[in-house]
Image (cartoon, rainbow, N blue to C red):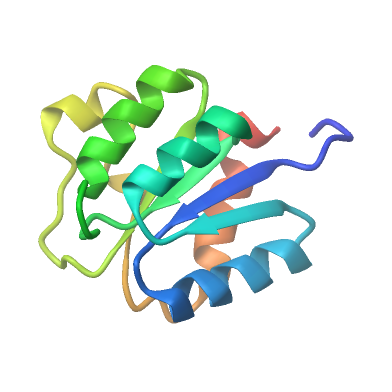
Amino acid sequence: MSNRKQRILIVDDEESIRRSLRAYLEDEGYEVVDVGRGEDGLHVLSQQPADVAIVDMRLPGMDGNAFVEQAHKLLPDMSFFIYTGSVGYKPPPNIQAIGIGEERVFKKPLGDIAKLVDALENSQELR
């Protein structure tokens, strides 16, 4: 991993989840920005690019799939992890095409946030 802190964007409409993820990730040494809407996430990314986004699927306004598609167009090298309460969520073909398979989908509630952080750290993008 480079000396630069990796920047992670959290997009989730549940403030308590954003707060928990942010605190855990900051304790692990990441720079974290969090927003409650996909549109706000796109605005943040246009000002402060991120290395990784952790995205909920059910968001007010733009849903998580639309956010991922648009964010990928804006920052093609950014990677994505899905953190959703939708038990039956499987990445649709257009989302799989940008590298998000089921191994990057985490279901809420995640009893151990460390599993998500391990996946982040093991991803090629954060080495």
